[in-house]
Image (cartoon, rainbow, N blue to C red; front, side):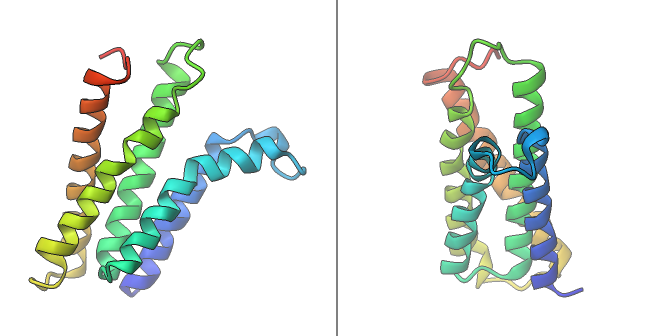
Length: 152
């Protein structure tokens, strides 16, 4: 499997997570709710993917970025559905507002890692996964301590 195929698999994992978080009873209907939620959940991934392609990041880095985003979406979805207050109707703004952390991580990868060093594909994937995860976590921590009430 080459890096491009691995990136496609990681992107498909993100689409799967977004699909599972959308209302399943309306999957095959013309429901705006399902398709709107799917776009709201996976839309940031798509924008970050476009930026990664614009930055000419290597396929292994893109795979790591997409996997980190899918992992973050699944953890955020678990937190929202099982631990957050039902009265928090705008809670998904925290998900959208944490995406600048991923963008910053992507830019850091492009500047410091992408062209300067050649790593094995798995090492490059792990580096991207780590950098994006740390940047998203730092962004989310700052949001929870300033703009949002996250209950932590």
